[in-house]
Length: 217
Image (cartoon, rainbow, N blue to C red; front, side, top):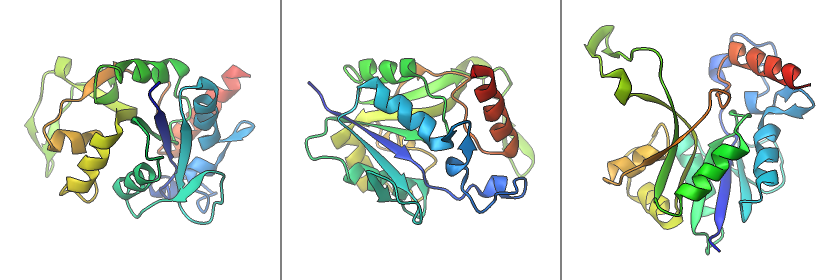
């Protein structure tokens, strides 16, 4: 049976939320969300799935956690640190932003199934707004909405392939791991995500997450 390692990225200082939130010294992934911290919701879903040979947490210093390694200065560095920490016999790796607390078991299962056929898999959902490509407050182009999707995590890969991509890339602050595969010319397959799998970036996102938790109680 193939071995899939899971990496939860807990890095980041939450700078975009600092100006709005009184507990600005606490990174958003460690904020309370119901009876758990933000990151613990995704971690619990991963643990209950039974899909993973190991789960690695990548975090900033000052937050001692079980099975946790130190992240880097950028998301790209943190992701690579997690990849290098996987067991040597790992076949696939799944990478998720821990500030997406409501990732579903169904999404994880879609990745596990897709990895039987594809070497790189992304999670995406449709966009209902028209996307404008803008530079210096000027619209450069408006791509067809039917071709645009909103990217989420998790993203999953052949372990050897994503490790190679991180080692060869010329990027230093890549927005995600799929971009490194595209840089090497490898195709990336898409599985359906969920509107509930949103990322907590602002205080509004956090308040909405609290509302979602209260609805579940």
